[in-house]
Length: 113
Image (cartoon, rainbow, N blue to C red; front, side, top):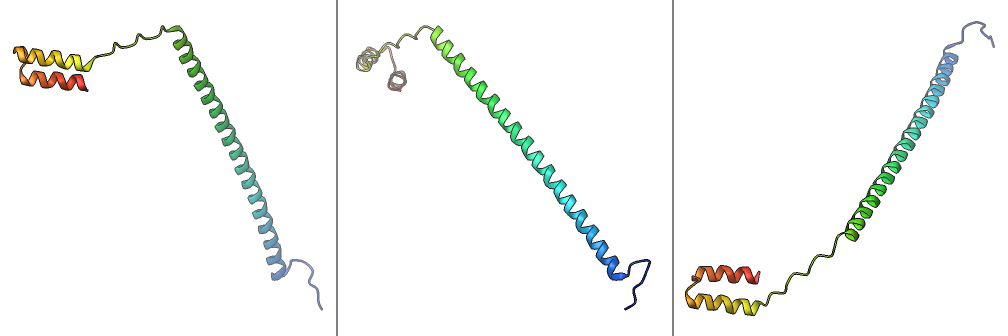
């Protein structure tokens, strides 16, 4: 077999090109993977910080509401309305002619609502 000295043959050139291309692809893939991992880690860190900030804001709001509730005097209870007595008063006013039928119906609806 005769061996050539000098430039590689067609098969050697194709093999060398395949090795270079494969190496470039592997390096490129590894770099891309590392960049994706860094981007994902940064995104997760930002999400964690945002969640911590949100939790702190909610806690501060709850404390403010609790402080306001502790400082404010209790609201007086609404006086209980005796519906039957009020309806009897409205009926008496209607019978006396002070209220028309429409006014009586409106007042009664308001009272029962």
